[in-house]
Image (cartoon, rainbow, N blue to C red; front, side, top):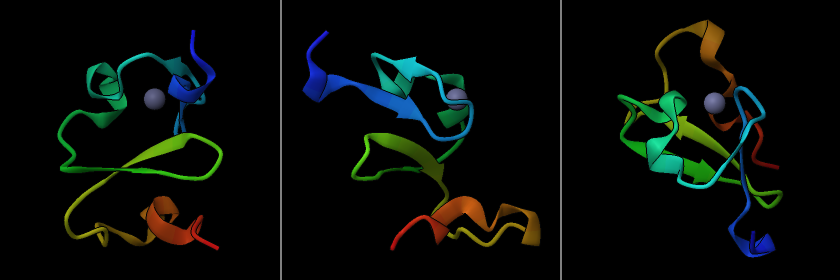
Length: 60
Ligand SMILES: [Zn+2]
């Protein structure tokens, strides 16, 4: 596997080949990938509930 292509789900910490095939991204409109190649599914309006403050809080 090419190192540049490694992506890790930020929710379940599983390495995936194709982000779009990963079940955690199902139903989400956008994927955010951080500098460590963790990806997070985000909605257009990431304010579903107070429990989901993970959505953009990892941005430093
Ligand atoms: Zn996942």
